[in-house]
Image 1 (cartoon, rainbow over the protein chains, first blue to last red):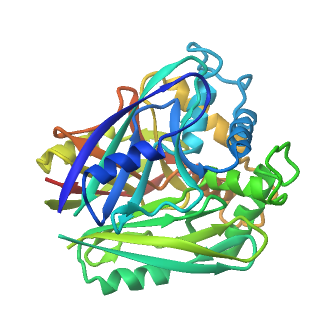
Image 2: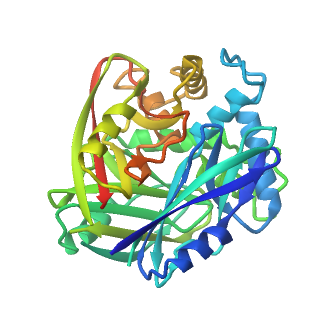
Length: 138
Length: 138
Length: 138
């Protein structure tokens, strides 16, 4: 049994879903394990992770619009010193995930056909986001 | 240290919470480990996982009604080609989980007394859902 | 490769976010591992876990107020025998997490600068909450 860790940086250019399935899969393949568990961890409180449909792009735009509606910029927040998109960003992060774990079987992640791994950026301005990939297995 | 992986199929007959705690526990027992970590992964984007109260069934019906209200079928969605229950299904999946990990201690999962593991089906029509169970430990 | 498990109790005095980052980090350090994965598991269905900003306390009070608004006490619930804060507590638990996994790298958890680990208590009355910490690595 062995383990590997890797830091990944994703540059974002505004709110939305940024897919990094292929990057994660390529790193996993390099570790040459057959069975194991990949954990993806997002080191932020205003960006999060989501596994969602990778086919029709309107699913992603609908998800983004929905979360804007669910945690609007004009809510009755006390924390407003970092911009009107900051408190909604914390709420959207709380409502989704900062960590995902995906089993590895026969050398590949067990993602379903329509499942992609996304960074969900909640801030308007460009950011460099740090993701940690951790794999255990053999 | 060793690891085991297993695919599980759950047939659903419409929206709602389908408990599979006993199935997961039985498979875990067969692996004969004392300490470890079970990861449950749902390979879909319109069905999800939830750990919730296994006692009063009105908790489950209230949860289902609440998520129907939070992500209604008549929302302003652009993705509507797969039926009016499809986009709400993606949103309910985003708001809950597709993966859960539960530690194993003294040969048993550390679930609390009132915690059951549920597949949360968000589509109206019957589906066969694939769940992957991954256990590491000894 | 080795693994450790530990039960932690947190006494709550009403709704809100209770940080236990330092307690988790201290236990992890005692296990003297360099690389690994910490899993935090909450054994309840009316309290949950959240990784959130540990700087400005108004972020936490805004999060609490937001979830009160999203899952109000006066909702149309059928499950009301355990008090008006009980069903909202189950919903807030469903909308957040009962489990978090955080990679360990160079002997420390890879939490971001602003990330703290919180127990999110959703019940009004005092409770003793059980958290399980599970670490695997070497």
